[in-house]
Length: 198
Image 1: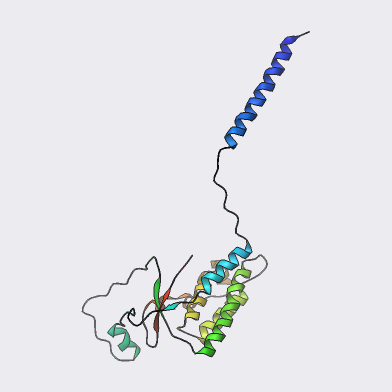
Image 2: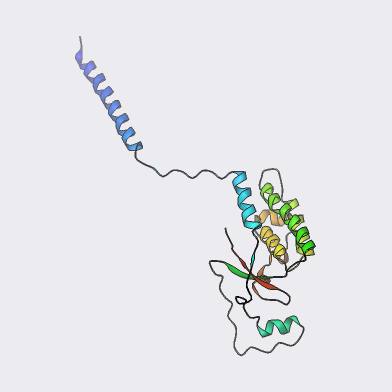
C-alpha cells in the first residue's frame, strides 16, 4: 500500500501530542490566584465596619488648644486679627482628630438606632431595583436632630459616598455633604480620634 499517507498521519499525531504537552507544561506554571469576587454580604460587612466604628476620645493631655479666634467667634465676641495668615493643615494619612459634641445617653441611643438603620440600608440600596430612600431619610433625621455629633458626621459620610446619580435623585444638597467644620474645634465640642478606612 501507500506508506506516504501513513507517515503524514503519524507526523500529524506526533505534532498534536507535542502541542498538547507544551500547553500542559506552560499552563502548569504557578499563576497569581484571582481574588474572590466581593459578594453582597462582604460589602455589607465592610459598610458596617466603616460607618459604625466609634471614635476614641482624646485624653486631656492630648487635646489640642482651641485657637483664641475660634473661641471668641463662637461666643459672639470680636475675634482679634491674626498677625499672619494661618495655613490650613493637610489631611494626615493615619487617624484624624475631629471635634464632636457629646450626646446624652438617651440621644445617643436614639442616634445609634437610626445609624444602625442607615448602614444596612446603604448596602441594600446598592442592589438592583432598590433605592437609598431609607438610608437618606435616616441620615437626614440624624443631621437635623443631632448637629455637631459623631452621628451627624457618619450620616454625612454615607450621603457623600453615594453615587452622583443617586444624590441628584434624592436632592442631596451641598450643605448635607459638607464635613469641613468637624476638623476645627468649636464651642462645646471635644476632640476625638477617628480612624478612616476605605
